[in-house]
Image 1 (cartoon, rainbow, N blue to C red):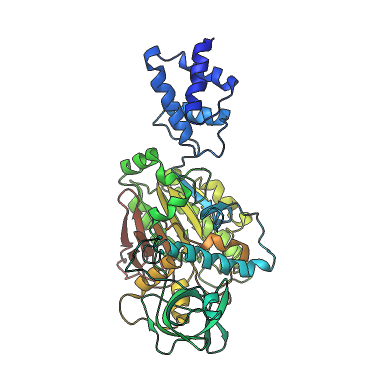
Image 2 (cartoon, rainbow, N blue to C red):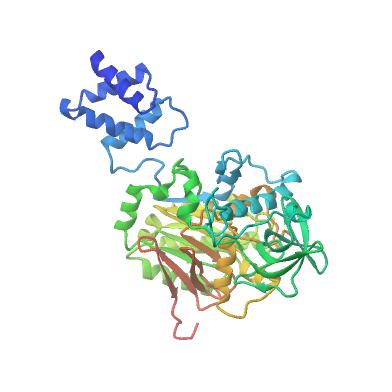
Length: 523
């Protein structure tokens, strides 16, 4: 039994750091200290307190769980915690919602109650959320941050709220941020949370990106007689991932089991860097009813048989024809044929994960994003034979060590090109696309008629803070680009484009383009 002096020393040391430790827990910790050399007890106690403080406490009262985690971290500093997952596929219906809390003057996380059929109010709330995220994100950009009292700032742009323009207090050259809408056919308007103004785009100079109806833009022009005559039109500036995370501390914004951001885990970073050969393979249009596709995939597995990848991410469509009554049976047969191929490579079957991301048109749930996984009754046999099988949502999030990956299967680039107000003729179109989605902090910044989404799950399509890798499996040709320190890739159609696919190496943050060579008969 520890002496009273040691127990009091434990309690008083915690008190110095503003922490309250009950007498019962003080006795328990003092017992642990008896196992430590007397001259090392003070140092060991300080290490425990450091680990407690690192837990992002919401209360000064220390619980037994807080103390256990801290002691385990001190005893086994290199061991991964249960929540420090090496690989985790995250259902987007479970991720937290990010919103700006005006009273705290920062972004906060909010848990969403599951409900696919939401009330009508959420239809307008989703656009309000999109706007407010970009407004407050932009207002802390150095170019738009107002000068402090007494400060003289030369290169400062003042964003004028629309209600100020409507009140008549501001005219002439202005910068306005709002959601671009077409309330009357052929007539465009800018909306924010305080009002609506008509805009004249006839002489507007469109900056890089794909600007569409429902895009949130910054317009610069002359405001006269109730109309904003736009000179320049562009997106709000992107924000780096590191800057975006400042508001959240070590809280987990990406989703998953851990309360804390695994991006900050030193142990996972060490594990990641030690696995320099680890790779994740991305395949799109994996037609399971096509014999040639399955044969080419078997060749791929043969090539990786000695060094199994971390995971194969297989995106739909999973059948070569539109959904019809025979689709269910064809999909079951296709999954069985795929399982038969995978089983031939025991190391891959036991080591690699097989992550299935359905296309919007795949069977099982409505053509609305986020899309539910393939039905369990169709995938049951496959899951029994392939231990690493994971049937994910579309989009889904993948956390591998400290890397954050978002996968979306949908022909979004094609839809955005069709609906853009001005098609850019300079530069690669995928570069314009990358800028568009990251500047909008959204995977699908389209109007709801163009791409329906569940109103209450708009946050599941947001990409804020920006991840390390965005995979947009699109019908467009394969590409790879980078914007705001984020890789944006399209694997291309495996079934159509020379059986091409993409490989991501997390340890090196490297993307490689690959393809299965043609056979002697040219197939």
